[in-house]
Length: 490
Image (tube, rainbow, N blue to C red):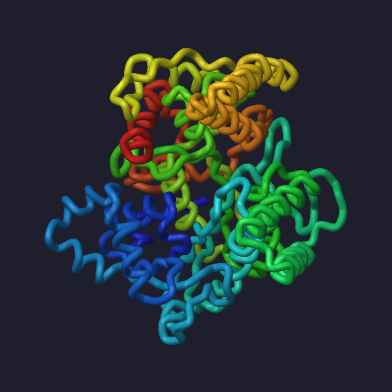
């Protein structure tokens, strides 16, 4: 594998980015504009009804973010004219044919001009409505592929998936493609068209019954989880992402295709500055409950390896892969994570959380510091449920009885106690597959890509993505937790 100059490759290139308001997309857009101001055009697809709405979303949800402060400092008063020249917001929706781009002139301009398509559009909720997840994660991937085939200059389609399309597999998980219709548990009958029809029939039936929006949403969520479990995937998110990969592999023909599978994506390691993050991610849900004193125990294997990787490293790998495989009619899969090269255990994260919040306690809405103790980790369901019954359920029953006797005077305490139990059970059910995960993600392809970048590019240090350089304690204590508190839990 030979690489020329990565920065030079980006010069005068036009790139279409779907899911442009997402976490990785923002990091990608910022990096391209910062390191290669001579990029020709970034077409950013945003879910919007018209160009005005798309432009508004671009400025409010992308360019207006703190992430772009380095770019703002660099360009100063010239930033707006630079952005106007380089960035074109596109109203659309990847769950529709032609990506929902209704303006024919704009559509034809993209087909004529685009060199690279980067598909980052996804819904990442584990328990998303099945109709929504199927439309974006599965059928959306197919729509992007069909759109790509109409782009006359296209050198590359890069699709960002997730390493957890592997389900709950154990041992070394290879960078291998998923076969169309092959379920993880060996069950027969997995068919994307059948899943689509199932969703359509379900929605029609609910509409005929004049079901409420709440009922429709709940039913669709339950259907997604049911179908995922039926074929061996732990949740709707990874199931629909897996089917998206299957469609791409089956119908790509001679299109140069790279599928990138990141693991658990965390805050930026270094660029454009350390600690930037958006939204609550897997391990951060635990942190959010723990720091506020709402989470005191967890069902998790302390020795389980949680595979985390900073967002800027994922983006760097994306850029290098784009350059490495441009104009090569192949399907290449890269798993981007840390479990093989620099493993991080649940127990390590637990210790980092305690160390940080013991020294820097959360200040609650009453202005009081929340004292935390170490999380109690249970490695078996039986012991966990026993503890739950004694520590939470029994006191709640007593509180509810006293509240009844005292004419609802303890209602606030009951509500607070009940909320803690619901939060704990929600986190346990949602994250159990990851807190007991026994797989290690192989990164042989990714390692070769790293080596090629180091040997071929004079500016390889701009595109770092080697997890071995991360000191996890320093990263969590000094970068990730402060970033999460500053940008998400503020």
